[in-house]
Length: 194
Image 1 (tube, rainbow, N blue to C red):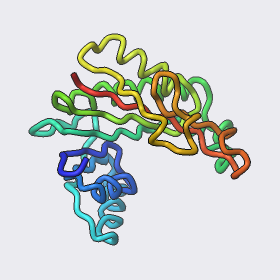
Image 2: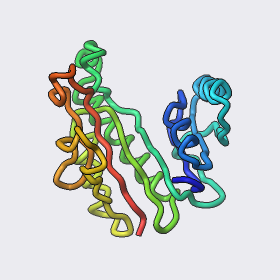
Image 3: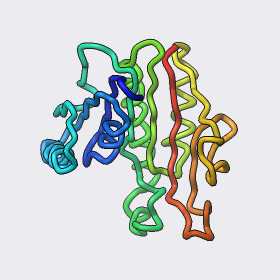
């Protein structure tokens, strides 16, 4: 990612933006909330880091030229965080998950249009529900022949090899690493533009 143009979509509060900058990327951070964007800018300033911070709805965001890499850590049901947030099952029902999956699909489809040939999009969220992860990504890829899934290599994740699915996606569950206290539920995949 060093020297590449990257975008962090849904960027606040800025932790992932900071990681991209630390890896040498030229980063554009997009956030739709003015207050969250201000928090992101404050966090970057505190860390002595610089990014092009853009206030925009992701679905309206149209950069002048395509990115080499995009991170879309999408809004989700947060069912993967129930260990720390036991109220989640009471605040998010099946209708909420379906609505969030629909939004994620729109966001992912738009994000894919923002990379050039050979560019990648990393899609992630902290949901345990395949409707917000595996199923949605499979649907997008099924009717988008110009994009392909890039398998994540388990060798790059020592100690978490079991988190790499047969398709090469990343999926953690609270049952993993139980002897160390467990993990949050998390999903991620890498999609490349051909």
